Length: 335
Ligand SMILES: [Zn+2]
Image 1 (cartoon, rainbow, N blue to C red):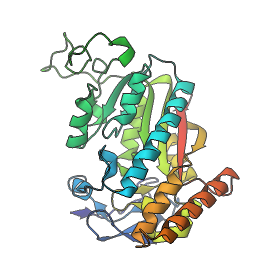
Image 2 (cartoon, rainbow, N blue to C red):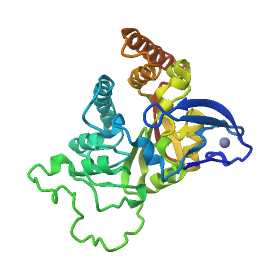
Image 3 (spheres, protein in one colour):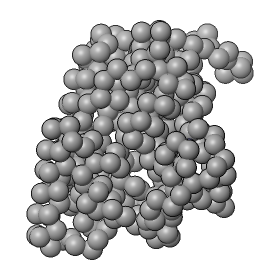
Image 4 (cartoon, rainbow, N blue to C red):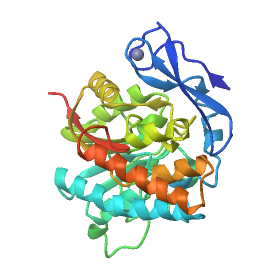
């Protein structure tokens, strides 16, 4: 069942919202969904939206590539190539912020490619993934993954590859519950566990994004980093493709942040935005996907237009005129 919000999920105002845009779910249901804009603070949110119990129905697609490692189509192959390039950038960013040996949590880790790469770099990694298939896949790599952020505890994380080179057993990799941890006990809520928590294109999927941010704050060390990647509806590619813009991704994206609303959201949870980086490859991938939603692919002109729009979007972002198609927000606890 869908639920209708009567209050803004960011400012809690009940003055109502104006229609902003309507998009068809091109991936799974092919139903029409709507984005509304709060009359008080301007925040965009999907309304009505699937409730927390039936949202998983909208992820039942072979094309939902972020949960897969094996590409099926040309677009999937492009996605995986971009993911590889982006992995190097993400890894560089983490290394620039926290030293090797630090503890890292990836929320919405999917099939665990990022965590695997960071473990190889020498970090202690742990993941959160609500979907069972990708979670089990990540666990099969010997990475500790739980299904929600409230189940994250200190004594369950994956050792870095460099520390367990001589050991092959799952037990030695920290996959099993360590000796001394009694499964029957209810672990206490713990705090200050991680030097970095990442949410790569995840926050916009979470019904309870405010609570998730609060929990992130609790789990982070005092000088830890919260890293959040988000699509930006004010980018040039979004303006060009309008309701065909693939990163609206309704109804899976419940919220549509811009710099102002994201800043407000993290400040409510006690974070300050320290830096914003662009994700330059997302504009190309999103533009190609948007062309496919307009039924302009696989014609060469469709690819050419997507490339041009992606390039112009990056140029607009580089000159500061418009945000990039996706941005990374680097945040720390407000002192
Ligand atoms: Zn509002």
